[in-house]
Length: 356
Image (cartoon, rainbow, N blue to C red; front, side, top):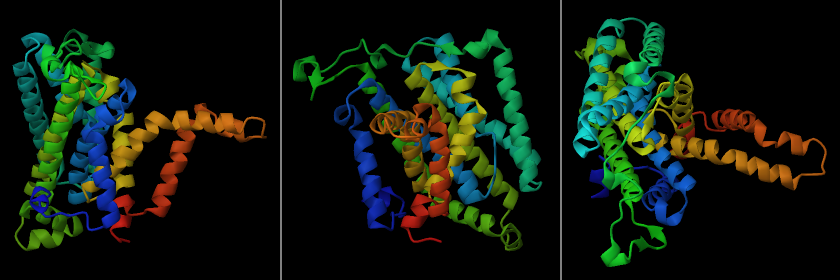
C-alpha cells in the first residue's frame, strides 16, 4: 500500500526513509509534539514550502527548465484567495473559488510564457521569466486599489478556521494533550492535509510515463525530439502543472497567514530561497524538497537562537562571541549552504541514495 501511495518511488535508502518518516511524524503531530505559536507556524511553513519547492523541482530537476517566475505563480494563488475572501465573504466557497481561479490563472500565464519562450535557449527563457515576474511584482505594488499595494491585503477566513472557534468540548473538554481544540488547529491540519495531497500528486506525476519522458528530454532533448516526442509540448505542460501547484501552495500560505503582500509572496528573496532548497535537498528527486525545505526553514527560524546561545557560552573568549553574534546569522547560513554543496554535490537525497 505504501509503495502504491508513493507511486513506486521508494526512498531507496534506509537512512533516508527514516529521516522522511521522522519529518512526516513531526509535521503530522506538530501541534501536540511542539506546542507553541512559533513552532506550529514553522511546521506550517515547512509544509507549504515542501510543496512549493517540489513544484519547482518538477521544472528544474525533472525538466531541466530554469525559471525565475515561480514566486509569481505562488503570489497569484495567494492573491486569488485574498481577493475572493475580500469580495465574496469569509466562507469556504470563497477559499475554493480563489484557490481554483488562482491555479487556473497561473497555469494560463505559464502556458502563454511557455509557448512564446520555451522554443529559445534555456538562458533566454530564464531571463524572460525574470522580466515577467518583475513586471507583475511592480504591477501588484502599483494597483493599490485592488491589491493593497505595498501594504498588502488582510482578509477574514471562515470562522471555523479562526482561534475563536472551539470544538470537542463534550468529548475532550476543549483540550487534547494540553492543546486547545480550536480553529487554528483545524487550519494547521488543512495546511498539512492539502500539502500532503499536492506532494503525493507531484510524486505521481514524475513517476508517470509523462515524468519519464520529461527526464529523457532533460538528458537529451535532441534525441527525444528525434524519436518522436514533441519536446515543446512536454515542457509547456510541465510548466503549467508546476505553476498550478505553486499557486495552490500560495493559496495555503495565504489561508495560514490571513494576509498577503508583495514581500510575503512575490519577492525575489523567496525565489532564491526556493533555489537553495532544491539544491540542498537534491534536484530531480521530489523527496529533496522535504529535506531542503525542512532544513532551510528551521535554519531561518532557529539559527539566530542557536547563535545567541553559542555567543553566550563563549563570552569572555576572544573573537568567538562576535563571530557567533546573532546579527551574523545570514553569514553562517551562507557558510552552511556552501558546505552542503561541497559535501553533498547531488543534494542530501542524492548522497544518501549513493549518487555521485
